[in-house]
Image 1: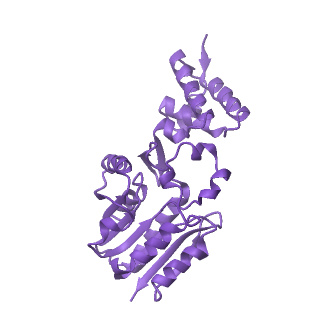
Image 2: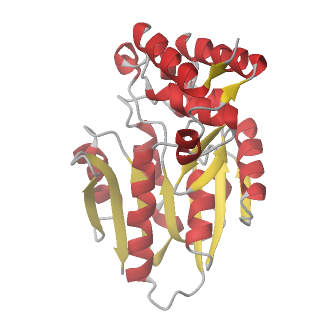
Image 3: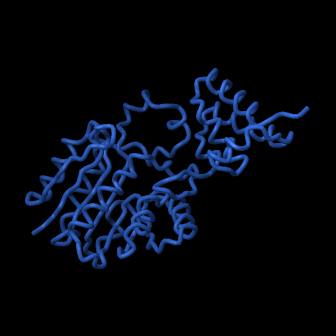
Length: 285
């Protein structure tokens, strides 16, 4: 019995929908199985699938129905036009974090117009998405990436090697690995979800992504407060800090940085959906 690609896609889409999962996962998993792009998949709709392909595909669909994220099944995620390896040791990079990159690059251009070499630290690097992307987009930067998790650093180092990005990876908590130097740019996407928000979260996230990369004390604000307290002696006279935040945390996080950097320009920046998503603290003494 021969079965075609479009039959697999239709059946998987219906199966996912019936089980409360998003249909687009069927396409992503089929593209992964066939090692093709979206356009390639469209062109292959009438192609026949082998029995092994069919079985493997529906095994992946079953895994996702049970809650495993598509990205952990395929082992990769796209971020800023590049493919990153992801596994259960790291948070899956989100599209919102790409906006942190865009805003950081704008500020590098305006604060360091001569494009001189700058020192940049990414605190809590996870998969390395921020650090590696910044190095690729601003090659004049010397980039240091830190994480408290040695397993996450292993994944980040793999991604840096695959994407040919020269990064200095350091293990340690928050600013501990970078206290011996002064910095032009510090970026971070720390854990910022309050523990009591867990009940509202998708099981796909809650049961599979690392909780250490999701949750923080003090209603999700603890690490922002600590960063704001620890960074003043580490920043150069002309420099900036950029952090991603939860959409309800703008005012609280901004206050931490205003208190620690009273002369700085602290700005809450909205994402493409008009939600508070980033805080930038520009220091120009």
